[in-house]
Amino acid sequence: MVKRFSISLEQELLSKFDVYLSDKGYSNRSEAIRDLIRKALVTDEWEADVEVIGVITLVYDHHVPLLQEKITELQHDYYQEITSTTHIHMDHHNCLEVTIVKGKASVIQQLAERLIALRGVKNGSLSMSSTGGQLH
Ligand code: NI
Image 1 (spheres, rainbow, N blue to C red):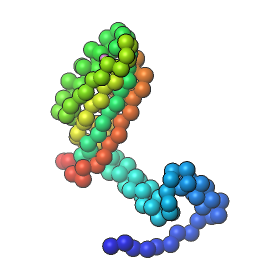
Image 2: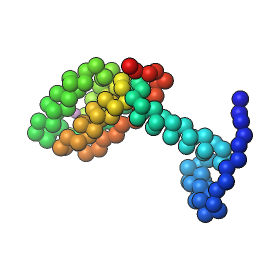
Image 3: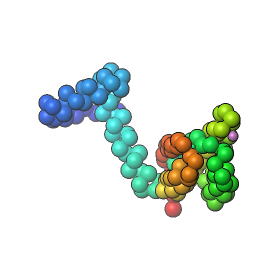
């Protein structure tokens, strides 16, 4: 069931919001507000340590000494969270590694941060989705 409610906003904030809508390709304000609310609630769930599923993406130069070993070491430290890893040799120097992870949000975030912080990792990101499950 869809409920309606009204929002009061300063003109200036509303104008900025309308620019944001057109930049992001939203066709109406309700759709954008729904997405923003969902995003805020998901962030809140992450902080509450619910179970999440996620993807860690790394781009790195495999010639950097010990980098590959450090990545493997970390992945073994978190073997319970790692579902699978796909390694793609992009070119002579660069590798793309995509790791599917599942577990407690804070643990997944910690793993991603540790991987992304390694020297030689040029690009890294984590995207997570809540599975709706609560971990105890
Ligand atoms: Ni490679």
